[in-house]
Amino acid sequence: MGNWATGVTVVTSQGPRGPHGMTANAFLSVSLEPPLVLISVGHTNESHAIIKGSRRFAVSLLSDAQEPLAVTFATRRPDPENAFLGVPYTLSPAGLPWLQGALGCLECELQAEVEAQDHTLFLGRVCALREGGAGPALIYFRSSYTAPR
Image (cartoon, rainbow, N blue to C red):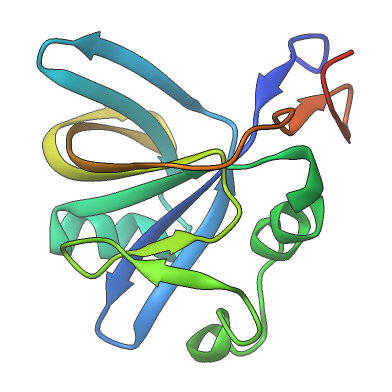
């Protein structure tokens, strides 16, 4: 699967201990009418329980300048309650973190869940969005971050 290039996102949620985020490249647009997107989240990821409980998630589409954020949210942090310390973000209408500088941000309401072995596919209806800046997207290809050529 390393030979398949994907865009890079940070999926955020709001849990009882505050904001939470995870880097995800398993993201896709499913439908334009109504606007639906899909993310895949591993059962052991803290975001899994938060999304199931809150029934909401947000997606920030990363630019190539945001590779450090992709790395930050791809690793487990020893202090998840301070995971957003130093991370520039604003809140979506429902209070979910949208990363500043992203190419675009979506706020989604959970519509369906499909169990897929050790992951759950979460289908979300886009409730709000924010367009971001222009520029190349961050891409993950062959275990490295890159930008389109």
